[in-house]
Image (cartoon, one colour):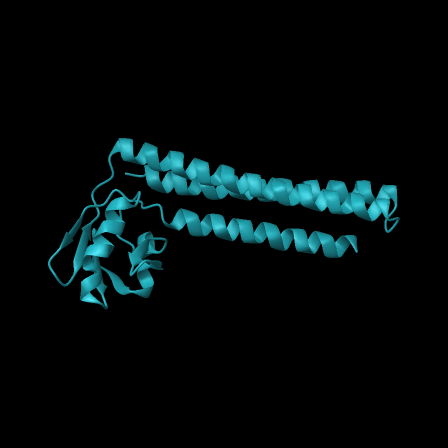
Length: 185
């Protein structure tokens, strides 16, 4: 019973790490990568639609992204969504394709991105701690219902804390690696 709970805890925490990795992929490190636009939503006929579901995004050059919408009428909507986003990119539209030139990162922009990474890391740490809290409450329920002994509960609490510490450490390593990538000139 406790082992099943610990396995479920690891699965939940793995999903948090996965979400953090996905979030951090959207932070650009000065290179053009279509993944930068994965989270961008475009107001398309009143519905927030992922950009990747309405266009083809490519990186023909190291510092250039091109967006070719399947519906040419959506060019202005896509352009508006890019301008409203926190990407800090200026789209240029030729009537068929939108080009996004990825500028060289300034030191100020790098610092800004590192702050955003730190924010995402803190959100992931909070999510991990919330999972730990839920598991500990469940363990207390088990003890209250006499499904496990008090000794088993304390051993399980220690294991949950070990798992939590490991995932917090993983978050720190992921964040430091991304920060190093951003600060690299």
